[in-house]
Length: 67
Figure 1 (cartoon, one colour):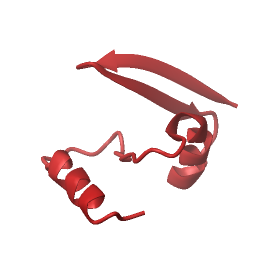
Figure 2 (figure 1 turned 60 degrees about the horizontal axis):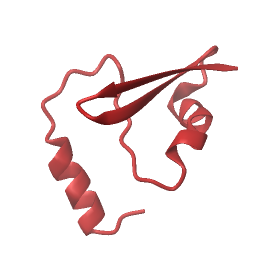
Figure 3 (figure 1 turned 90 degrees about the vertical axis):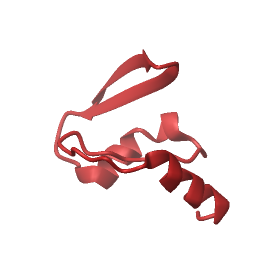
């Protein structure tokens, strides 16, 4: 069982998958699989405050064809 919250922020579709139990990060990603499909994605913990340059990180990932 899971709850899915959908939102649009800055023109980006965001799906929040909220598990009803503690499945850990990987288990929760598995619950979100139908939304991820075969696309690249970034996991950010809700209690994380950072100034990472996510665009640069993602561009590096794509340019090195990391899978």
